[in-house]
Length: 201
Image (cartoon, rainbow, N blue to C red; front, side):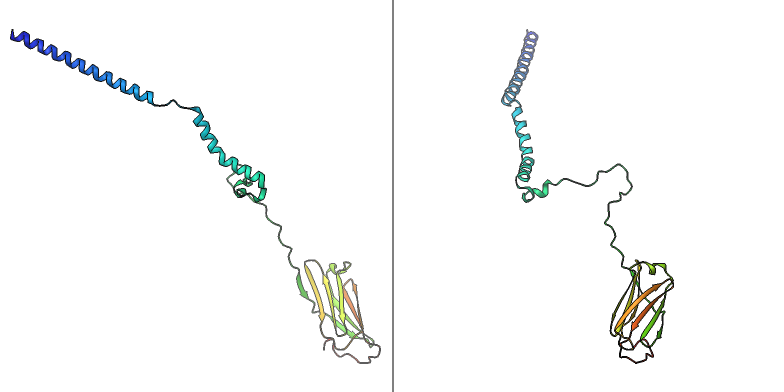
């Protein structure tokens, strides 16, 4: 009789344990369903709103530039990159450079010459060996009653013969370009009978 009672008690305990486990699983499932029922389904409207919010600063920038042009507050942020597109070649790209400034011509003082007093005139002879001296307008003569200057503009070079202080006064000066020399003629005043002993004072 004792063994039968013990066996009945064991079976009863097993049944109670099984009922407890089943009840626990049922409660857990109900809890999960309740929580899932509380979560609202995804709303496509939220995504559209987010996209609209993301685009709104860009739209505001474009509208501001369209209305105010260069005076727009956001104009500086609206510039596009105008740099040349990369062509895939890793070698350095040569950018456009400004044209170099024109070079100043070189100036040369003419120191080789000879002169002759011909009573009423003074002749000055300047030897030249450059055909550019023969070009029309290449040589120009300026003078005062006590100075004379011959300037030959040959492009990259400018040759100058100058006497800032002549030996005596003059009342005129001319020049003539010949194949191998330039002749400068200084005219003395009509009343002058003074002989020159030098070209410079």
